Image 1: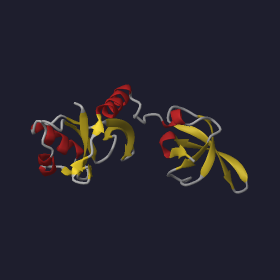
Image 2: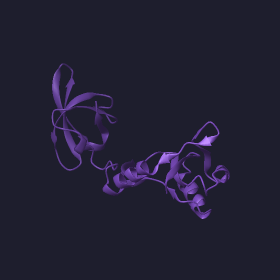
Image 3: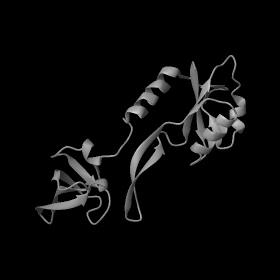
Image 4: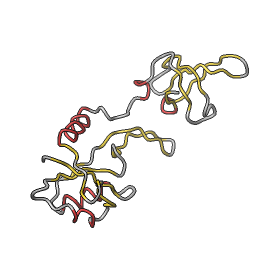
Length: 166
């Protein structure tokens, strides 16, 4: 493909739009990433679209008609500049594919992006919305965070997935 179109989908309909576009004969690509999800006291790795509500469709201006894409189930619109679709160079999509294959977009280890001594914010739990300093890794799933509470420093052991950079 020489160029790609960016398709804007309905909420949570990326996979449906992808399947319908492929069924119509278009070359379509939906980049994925893997993330941790916590639900009902369980942690699991799930696949999520890298760009929620967006996917790419291969486009050759000389041979491909793009207007039928607009009536595809799951598709809300095509990103356009005026009345014509805005093409994305093939090199950009190739870079995204390479990054997806290499796992550069996966967010599986929250600790990997944090260093000891870095300031972190605790997202939820009893210490929710507090900012502290990452002290050390306690075990595979918990870390020690140094918090300022009641005028003194206290070490709190919190789950890794509740942290984000401050």
